[in-house]
Length: 258
Image: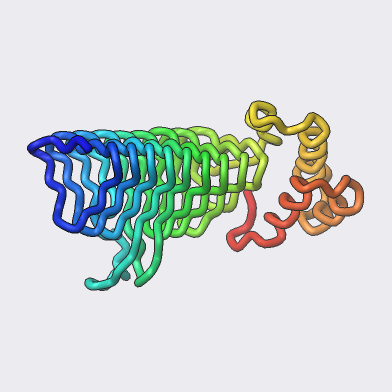
């Protein structure tokens, strides 16, 4: 364990083996840090925060501070949880939950780039990438392998589906369907079609990608309303896992799907 002489590690903090804490960093009393994790110069890790193993917290990141939600009441105990091998870059902020027991969660193998913000109750699945200055409002959910382009903002309670990609400078105010690529039209995010490049890189079969292309055509270019399109997808396409989940996502959306 390497703790710089100018760093502050409060009594009660639990640091694993081979943890590095850089100059002027601050680690609070209720923090748990896994083996091999590094906390860079000037970074602050506070609150009831748990960080997994082999993570990198870059200089001046701020994790586990009190939520900005005005519903917060002093004395509430809430949490931040970060998985293994996740990277939090410079000046990113990850806030505690609002109510007792609420968690803000960033999964394993995520990349949370410079100036990104995760508000209270945000949940990131594994392998999520948020490019520079992505702003996630309270209770946003990014499913596994989602990618959000730089300077995008996601409205509270929105869900971005697994293996989707959202283009930069997007305004996400409805749910983003899984497996899809979304661009910007008039500021709001619009579905372009399946995230073919991303799906191919992750080893999805050609038949699966073709089925998702057909599903997108039915949903967005067939002239059918949403209910009719989902029924056709269920009746006409082979019900592979990805198609079933796509339909499930649309049917269970709380904010409507882009």
